[in-house]
Each structure stands twice: as structure tokens, then as C-alpha cells.
Length: 274
Image 1 (cartoon, helix red, strand yellow):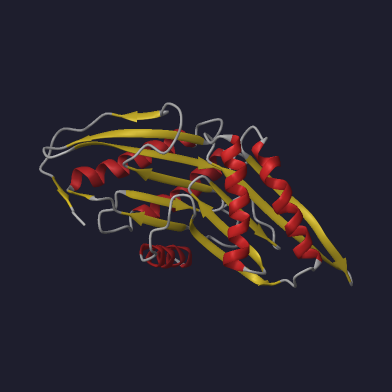
Image 2 (cartoon, rainbow, N blue to C red):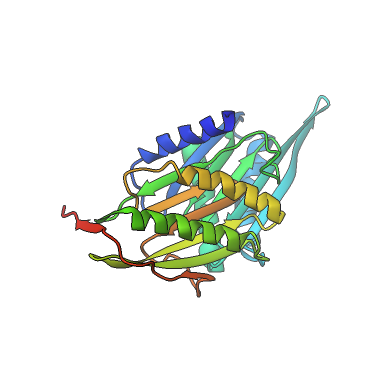
């Protein structure tokens, strides 16, 4: 019950956030206390921010994690835990740039807080002075961020809503059985007044077991049941997994999930003019 309340609170918060450009962050979270500028923690963070964009861009799975000893003082050990990852069909140069800009976001948005979690369309950066669990089922926190957008075309009717959920479930099923824990998909939607395609991408940290990946996605799918006002684009993510859908193609390569259109129904599409 506590976990559900945390998820609902995040959904309500980010439903009201103004739309940002696709090249910037779409959600963030600052955690923990503050560190002193020029302290061992600050210097370690500067080093990680300088090194990881290039290092991670040369990783086969466009992913990197770092566990770094910051300092030992009076018998106390201070650590920094970092996870960076990118959508796995990204170009390496674009990935390095995205990670670099995400680290810049952390300083601008979270200042000198010891923890920051930044979510962008192509990448995410997470760091904290407490261990970031590899297993979402045992993590001490369950942070799920989401954002819903609406395009100039307002699509009404059960057919479109059902298509969103059908594609999402097919993507989850494909991703949790994929060796890369990553999939891209599309679904045709044909109604009396419109014809369109839904596109989606889903992924988990490549270090997750398939069961843990599935556990993470179940939290995201719960969030999907809570959106309102007929979004035509959605982003949902935690540290361990992410899902995105849109009416435009935002990934490279051929979809690994392709769903045909269902039969026609009574639905309407209204175009809003600014």
C-alpha cells in the first residue's frame, strides 16, 4: 500500500509539469543531504562526470556503473554509487553527449545534493552516496517518474486506449525475454476517422535478471493505468527500467514487436487549432 501511494503521488505531480524540449530532461529527483564544494565527494563527482560519458559510450550495451570510494574519516567510509545508461539503439556520439548534459542537469537542478536522478529521452543518470540496489524488488526506495503529453490531434475512444495498453503488454513480454532486455515496437490503429501508428521502446538495466526486469515493468504498468486526459505520448521510468510510447517514430532500426490494427470501431479524432 505504501508503494502504491508513492507511485500515485509521482503521477499526479508530473501530470502537471510543463512540457520541456525533447533534448532536455523530462523528470528529475534530488536526494539526501548536501556536500561541500571542493570536498572529496564533490571532486569524485567531477571525475565521474568527466570520465563516464566516454566510457559508457564504448560499452556494448551503452551502460556503465561505478562504485567509488570517496573518503575514509574517523572510521567512516563515504562511497558514491553511479549508474548511467542510454536507449540501446542510440548512436555512441549522441549517447556521450546525452550523459554529459545529464550530469550538467544534476548540478543545475540539484546543486550540491549528494543524490540526483535525471531522466532524459535518450539517457538517464543516477548517483547517490547510498547503494543503488541492482534489484528493484529489494530496493529501499521505489521512485517511478512519469510524464504524459498530448499532441495537436486529440484521439478519443476505447480503441486508442486499448491499443496503448496492448502494445505496452506486448513490449513487456518481449523485453523480459530479450537477451538485451530491450525492445522497439509499433502498432497500427485504424478507426473510421483516422489511421495512425503507435511506437514504443522498453528496456531494463542489462544487469537485471529477467524476473527482476518483469518486476520493474509491473510497477510501470501500474502507473499506466492511472493516466488521464487521453495522452498521445507517455514516458515512465525508474532507475531499473523505462517505457515510452508516442505517435512518432523515435527509435532507430526495425521494430522487434509489430502489432496489426484491430477492427474498426466508433471513435473520433478531433484536431485542435492553436
